[in-house]
Length: 489
Ligand SMILES: Cc1cc2nc3c(=O)[nH]c(=O)nc-3n(C[C@H](O)[C@H](O)[C@H](O)COP(=O)(O)OP(=O)(O)OC[C@H]3O[C@@H](n4cnc5c(N)ncnc54)[C@H](O)[C@@H]3O)c2cc1C
Image 1 (tube, rainbow, N blue to C red):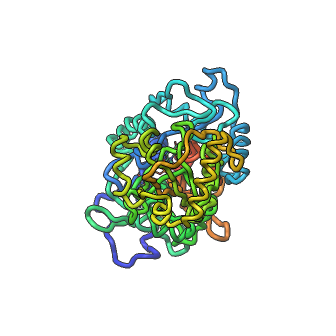
Image 2: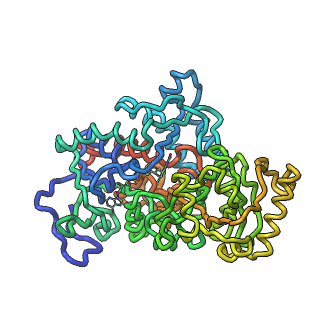
Image 3: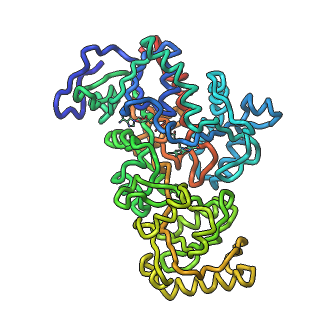
């Protein structure tokens, strides 16, 4: 193993107890866990560095919704399905914008990964698989999750991971944050540098896999990659884009930022912190929409109760800064269920006490607080009230026209698109080798999971399960195929 490094400012020490490893895995989340488990089970000597104090990564946050075609579970339900159908369906929903190479590899590996999870004890929630839930529907029932969201997946993986750690086959180092990739001077990766509880250290191995997740908890990086989308995220705070930054420093290609789609919708709990995103309950399936939505000009811009989540998300995405205002009056506040996930009393108390929840005696006053032209807001409300009276909304076709907006005081919520994912990521080939700008692979460097970008695995749409399942399935596949043990030495 080479001792020369390309970017060694000081001379960090290599840990005394350093062993020789076949593989360094950065991250112990959805992709890193199955990867380390399968590589170690094949006799690989795996070093797994994890920045957090615990394993699991985004599994602690994720809704845990997955999709796979050709699973045993489907067979038990008499559902006929195939990877080719999964591929076609996913590209249909994503308008052909998913990376075809990664998608093809994924659909082939998805069912074996779900079957394996079930062998490890994962129990699908009753009623699954279904064709669709929170996102656009698949054409068949291949969408599933556990009772306890992402944690159901983690609890299936944890015992076998712990066993391998105890047996010394996975060398797990918590609170070890990879800070850079080490190269041999000719561009081949030979290890990583990391911030550890004992200071900076270097770790060397013939192969490194970045399974370090997304970057939606890194406001500066987000702003660099998506300058027109103000960040409002609800993600694991360790999703800081470290893998992406370290690979980019070696000339790796980062793309896909344009394949962004926001979730509908949320607001910042702390207006100064883009990572403090909270969800608003605006899906007509979950709660009737009593309120009016207006844009920055005070005008309606969409059918508020449209049944298609894709329509609602894209309507918001077209607004400058993905921003909109939700308008309601006293009667709606008293009668409708809250838009936040709080109790009715806590929801009502927010107005006038949180910068995103405003209250005024008149519509003109509300317009001032929302920063929209007063005349336009009054006109929007007048036209909406006329539609309520007529029982028909000719402009947008809204169906739920329960009551006029007329009883003071008036209330407004400054909402925006919220994200749980990072669109851009590292370009890879079919072997998941990280690619340079010129399309050549960076030697000895692979990447898997959200570090590839949500745009690569799900395109410009939310295709059910197409972030978590590719992380799990391709992590497992890399663990089964990377040379380790005798073959890796
Ligand atoms: C609220 C929410 C709901 C979601 N719901 C769904 C869903 O239902 N279906 C779906 O498909 N997707 C969903 N997703 C997305 C999906 O869960 C993630 O994309 C996926 O879990 C990411 O897996 P990963 O292994 O790439 O990253 P992670 O699971 O985040 O793992 C990365 C790990 O790397 C560690 N790490 C980061 N940097 C370093 C470093 N420098 N050194 C060492 N370790 C590091 C992190 O601490 C973390 O443990 C959701 C996401 C969120 C936030």
